[in-house]
Image 1 (cartoon, rainbow, N blue to C red):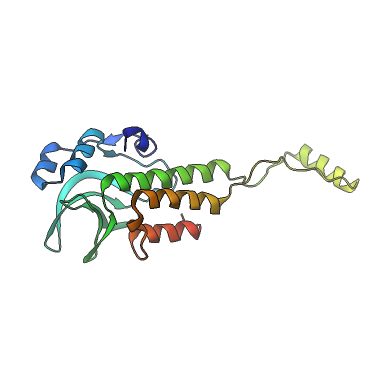
Image 2 (cartoon, rainbow, N blue to C red):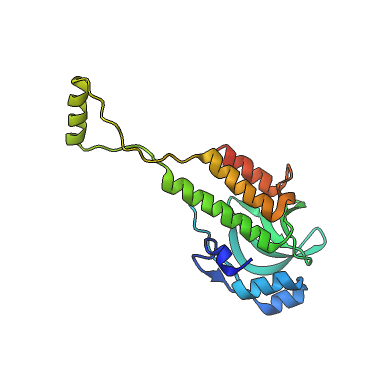
Length: 195
């Protein structure tokens, strides 16, 4: 994937990644090169960011060395880490599970999620507010038996937008969507309109 493929997640800038930390950790080369070239996103753009990136640091969880790159904003104890082989893992509370097979897939998932969030926000029709004069005119028209139509702004099709996002996720890393894994839980929360 190219840098432009991640324009949403890097739109607010990037965190610099130390070549020395990556070298000492022994991270596989393609992930290391990606991190050295792009850094890590400094802040995700959406209203509901699902990851807070941080400057990479080596941690030991249950006897395994991992490279912590972020955390869930609502779970200080759940770290997002890289294994030496480049897998993205959720680690904490005595366990760990795979999130994505590689960092580029993880960034691609975040890019699709942020695109979904931006579309949902931009196309949400929300409530219509009328001035007192507009409301008086509408009321008088109603009394005369006339119905004034609202503008025909296209409505956001949340289900279709979710299907589009999931299709992109499957293309990037279908294994990451297995039931019970990190992204499947995120997807459930999206489908339930919690995030």
